[in-house]
Length: 399
Ligand SMILES: Cc1ncc(COP(=O)(O)O)c(C=O)c1O
Image 1: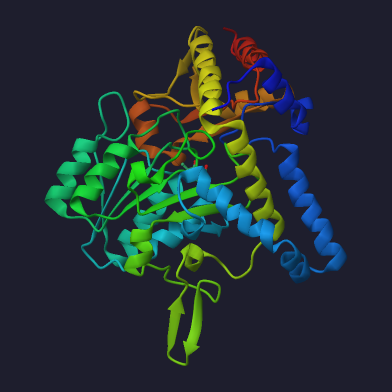
Image 2: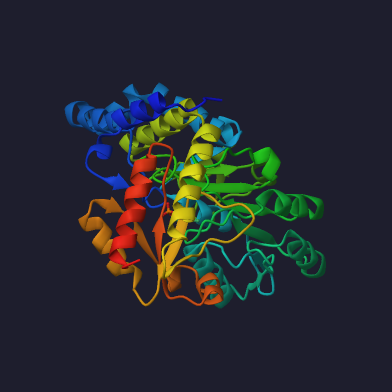
């Protein structure tokens, strides 16, 4: 594990052109890319323009394959378990579509699962008659694994799905304990690790999940428009494959039959944005070289500093709940729509984002709010940047 020093922080900032222009506290949206990621993308686009897209992919085939090893290392898996997909939602949907749901089937999920996932569960409910059951939360926030255990025992669900870190707060859900429940009961389990990857060390054997979906652009510091899906050996051996598997994931072997790929490639699309694929691989390599645990420790330290200071400003309410709180900090200011604060911060070159009730209805209603400001530092941010944001919020809200 790397021990972070001031020199490390300076080096990482020198690697990150965006640091010169912005106080970027929107890593949960899309982090600033470091130079090796930018170079991997731009070099490949240049190569495609010079020799042709298919020819460039052939020339870079070894690097593309090495990328699977880096992504696998990010989650403690093997390259055969990794599918490169368009984004976390696309990966999640590919996994979800591997189950042939019937009317009356039950999916167990949490009150803090990601917005799009909740919409997709509702679509399955409306179109296929699947029943969606939300497990109870613990008093301090986050899913209660005992509630999942009771539902699994009583309802024998087809699937359990949990967002590790929701999009709209600093909560970290106890995905390991839920994994234990699922494994004991033999129920398939999907973890949405979109906000976790690059922020928390991931070991899929500890999570005991069948699938894990992730994106490049957030705490892994990759480009937008690319992500990956981990599919366990258990899922691959079961013959799981997406409903709309294409000619990359399967071969049309005889007129009336197809054969799916042996590996997680079965979840991929034929058309691949190779520049982004290489950018994502470079981001994974960079994150591994920094050390995800060291990055977590520093990022969470900065978030703790932010929460503590915001909490002293009159009229500001810090909203994050749960026993474990991550690098996502959410706050609300009395009587102010989050958009007005985000806009005013942006004018000062401080990047944050608004979170709206429709991003997390259960969570927002429980907190009695309509909007929140989300600030998400990462290891390459500085204490001074955090303090600058706090000072700006204090000034803007008259605190
Ligand atoms: C918890 C969580 N899951 C999934 C997603 C979706 O990721 P993507 O936009 O890459 O599909 C997000 C995006 O913010 C998220 O926060």
